[in-house]
Amino acid sequence: MSEPDSRSGSGAQLSMETIMEKVQFMPEGGKRPVDFFVLEEAKLGGKQYLLVTDSEDGDGEALILRLDSGDTDPDSTYVIVEDEKELSAVLLLMRDSLEELGIDIEE
Image 1 (cartoon, rainbow, N blue to C red):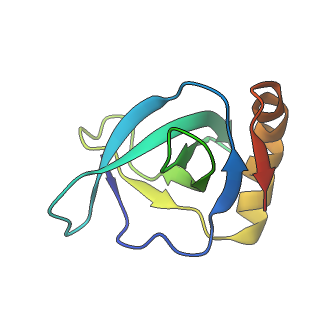
Image 2: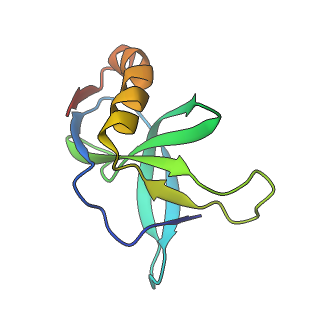
């Protein structure tokens, strides 16, 4: 799996009290994989999204990633969602299930 080079301004602060699946992403042009923990998955408009965090324990930085490769592509390509309307729509879909898990999102 891969992700873009930067982790710019589309993150959210969060607090969590749950065990999460760890996934590794290989940044384009990167030499080392980056570990993220999956908080939630969602589908919107036929696209798949992941809410990930860089910290398994305590407060961490969160990003919403969108799958930009096809289902038959052997290497999944995820990009950071930066469009405010798209971010808001995906967070709205995820908000209820995150609250049930005790995860607070601050945009």
